[in-house]
Length: 476
Ligand code: IDC
Image (cartoon, rainbow, N blue to C red):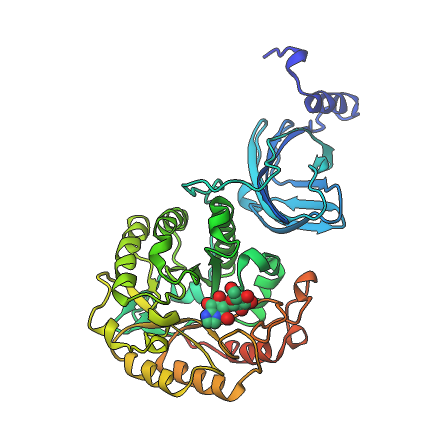
């Protein structure tokens, strides 16, 4: 077919010329086009989308390089490629499942990044060493306004989860059986793992190196993704936060960990304040992850100052949204008094036992902070554990502020109790916040090493030692 030269892009012309002067008749033609779009941008952060079009001969793998304009621009998480950054130079390498690009074939990759000072578009895009032509898509500049629907822009394009000895490979799809969480062999199991801090503040702590450390060094079974709704969280940019959560789910999935999606309501304490946001958010994430077997939904972190009847009403409106897309995933419902089964507001577990949420395959959240919550709280868990399914989706080894001394004695008593009852847990937090509940020493997330005790505070060292012991998951 004859094409008018006027229709050829600059990149294709360059590629054609390169091919023409090469001495070998069969030298591959190369060429590429890149469309770079800032999907959204907010104070200190942004999400970028990079569409790569191959204008040369078919290729079976690719590596895309580009230069950020300044060192304040950093990739914090990427997807659909293996991302790395050295100085201002960024490299994204194909996976086996998206390496094939026919002539004129295109693929999209993306990332979330941080910026300070200014966030100009990158330059010097090159695919397998060939400079690309390109176009810069619309950039948002100012923080985006909140759309009312939060359908994510990135597609479900994760590589299949690993098989073998990971927690998900062994246990598969979980479901609630009686008062326990059961694996694919219908046997009760306990998941042990860590919670993020607020991803609006500590997103930089969750990257390939830190997730590798959690999966391989800590041997964590579960990764809780805490998406605050207020406090500069989801309500400020639903699309960006939905995408950030989705990306973290993919990162946990790729490592064979369970992903616990935490809709982190806290203030105001009535979850119904965020009912519409919850519907929108859970519709999006449950659609995205419907085919996965490792996602657990936590629909209200810590209701407070609100009746159990109101929490139950909220749950019975949000759970059907999730089940409409993902019918078999366990869902966890927060309880009264900051998920204390009512204890912190003068109640107790009987309000749940006598008036349970009208839905199947659900569990109830219980939270504690070991230095603050002891005897009466342990007694409530001991009583409730034989009546209703519990999941400790958050606890601290310190006091309820997230600070104060690490209470090893109380934490040990608590975890021994949870172990004996096979109650799953996630510890607050896998982050480098200065507060004592944070596992990592301050500054850890600015580096690239997250493994071993050398990067951990006392609470982190304790939690790692508890979580890394053998799981002994039943396999028949
Ligand atoms: C705390 C964080 C702290 C942050 C504060 C405000 O540790 O850095 O400033 O939230 O959002 C909870 C909540 C959890 C709290 C934690 C410790 O679920 O969001 O995190 N906590 O106070 N319930 C009991 C304690």
